Length: 468
Image (tube, one colour):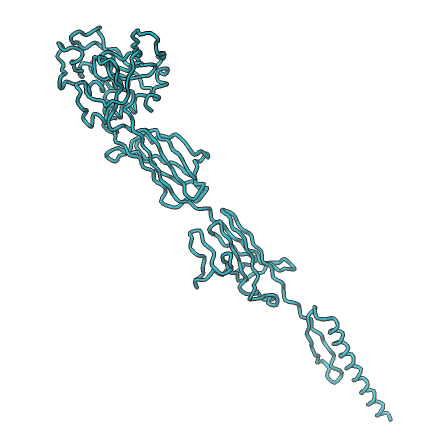
């Protein structure tokens, strides 16, 4: 803030900037404020006083040490001396805090009323009757005090109202200030916004409104993707709420701001008979930050169980959900193991459509789904020592699709053999698979045919014998 805060104020006030003159001619220019009747004292030049800012080398400044010479742009000033009263005494702590606050809040583009009110309050607080200065009109400019009531009465009503408003504002919001950033209590999800809080508080703990704050984010962005923004605290004194979207696991919000200095400072002229000037109160830089925690969005695994040949879904299949080793449980979004009532990796069953879904999984994470037991009709191709399984990596906010298929058992083909006339209605049944050896089947058929021929031979002999 400091001097640079006033760079645009001159043009805003309709006052031309002054270039640093090349000659030694006095360059005094009134800025924003009001001309009032003069307070008399010995040797008083002119019949008016000026309550408001001056233009010093193109910048708005306000004076202390009432009745000394007005600031001259040809004069150099040294920066950083502590502001004291006209009699050289230290300011009371509350007065110093009031001045610092007003210089911070009302020196950037003030109205004429605010500028005059600020000048009036500065003189009232620094040049009141005390020590070697008094209101005796016989005093010279070095020892005359500022007649607060006289000058207040000379102001227009709008400026009087501004005096009351500025004094009330200063007493309510003066420093020292503190800054605090609070992250959400709960862990955030990367990519999802959360409300962060910025508190700018005064000494009594109450919040200060309408304070400019620079917000910077790390591993996070605002809604519009920006990582830096200038904001103001709400004018009604509520906390500043900032919506933060984490982009990493440790989102951080930092704030920087100017706060009233503990003690205001002035700029001291080389000419001891010239008034000291102030622009800001020598503001104090405040900073605060906080970090939260965030994790990736949870993922989902969906498993489909199908027949290897027909592609039809298989329901009622028990599947165990594990980590990449096929033994340890997978991890849920809250970092707890995904286990069943027995404390072992959870076992799920496929539904009628042959699928089962596993939601709320920590991401990224390698997941395996292992078949616990073969479904009915698929036992022959199931090896309990190397059960079917499928693995993959579930990513944030994504669904990992896994598929496991089973080969059905080999079908059984029945063979019916006639038992002969003595055994009418009785059959002998043999069973073999469609994949049995062809030679074996031929041999088995040969035996059947041979047995049939033998039965015919014995029957024929018995008939011939009877005929003989």
